[in-house]
Image (cartoon, rainbow, N blue to C red; front, side):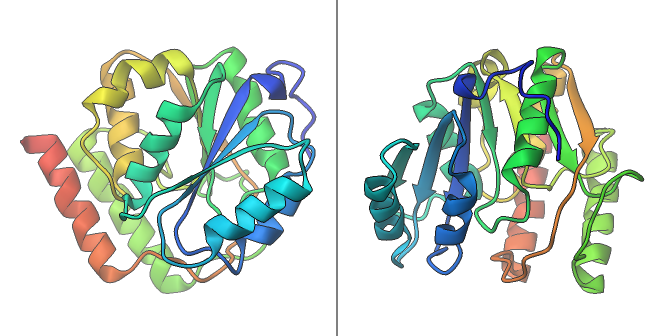
Length: 235
């Protein structure tokens, strides 16, 4: 466990969690977030009981600063995060997945490095990363192929652009958010690319990450991701 949040106080952090049909996992994840001193913004754009579970949790835990934004329309992962970023009120803005694959301690560690960087992303593919439960071999191969493609298309130096644990200074987000085109899983890549082109420093940190299974990423999502990135890069 890291203990470095004194450099970036929790109260100055906004944490966004896109939650598409996460009724089976969001409750446990919220329990893990009890005690987090910043604001938490949940984006629910599915058709299940996720929003109701969050609302009930909020009533039962009034000390937690939680806002749940429900959308009747599918926003996509990127669209949901962008909606949350526009809602965020704090100096530092981060996001994490709803499945609990990243702990709040790891997110705090990521936030803490914003005292000297404009953005920080967690990486599952650095030598120091700790992955107690790994993804299946097919997902790992797909991830490596995708990373090679990203390096070729965008020249990004990162080992892992798709880990769902990232945080940025508000200035960076406010500078590039309105130029973002992506609403799907390709959102992370476009955000990093635009941040780099705007002259911001985004660093990569090894992370402790556990595969929780039940990923909502399907083959059609992967195809849409690549198509979306080609549009971002060349149109």
